[in-house]
Length: 268
Image (cartoon, rainbow, N blue to C red; front, side, top):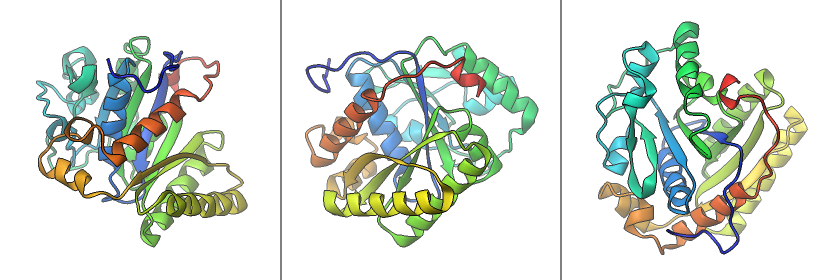
């Protein structure tokens, strides 16, 4: 079993994170996959939900093959127990398939049905990551609001910065008490990432009155592209690489967040 450090402990109760982004192409799914594998490899019971319906690729990134998908669960054609599959390092995955190119809106009835299915798994996992689609469509926001905390992935690019702000604004206006954090991906250095996170935090605080937790950064590295091209998660392809060191650091940071009392995470 891979240890994150010598003192990590299993957190309790289950925590649910929505990994999202204001725009595509920022590495959101790669971060969700590698962070999930890192925590699962360290002994956490982790469920990764591919909620990017229509443009899903987590099954390709992890090499899993599911008989049923999240869309079938949402439509009531399969139970969540039929749809979950085993992934790398004891990770459990709820797949969205290989992607159809069409994004289907859930609607209130379907969303309620899916939440009911998720309730069946609430006590089975320590951590749940929901990898949402990019942007602020109704589907994305529906999945975001099922989480306890939103992790917004951004890059140093100005457009990614602006779109991340829009995502934070949309969530904050509807759910002002929702915890929110950011991960800066493809940063050239820790200094660049920290400067961007500080600037982002100042702007969000000034205009939205919201505090943002900085979880960390993933450095720009050719090995990440290599792992994607080979369709092997970085956590398995280059576990000792610099980006994986950052993933483990972020994992430790997440485990260090104190759990608070709550009544049914999936009822949110």
